[in-house]
Image (cartoon, rainbow, N blue to C red):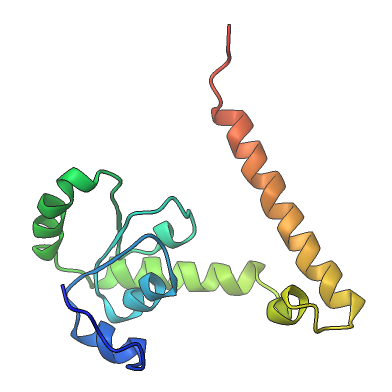
Length: 139
């Protein structure tokens, strides 16, 4: 484990890393493009879809998981196919919105606000639908 100067660009660090450990972040996604394995400690579902991500929730067994993943070779046609599918899906369902402008209340364009709100509502409904389908009935 190394502490790194925050001014060093992520890509310079990731290129030299053998493994990334993170609760979830853009760094995990960036590591996918460099073929660097990542252990995701958090529950964020979207980054768990990257082909370089190994989800792990038990901190007491994290050292063993690290050793296991360091022996795995990423890459090859199947890895590339999965990564391409992820990126393609982002373009297929994504849209160009000014999230930061809406979040910081800087944009005055009502269409931007509506686009972002509609996106949030869709994701919340999807998450609630998933929750309702997996919830165990209480007797």
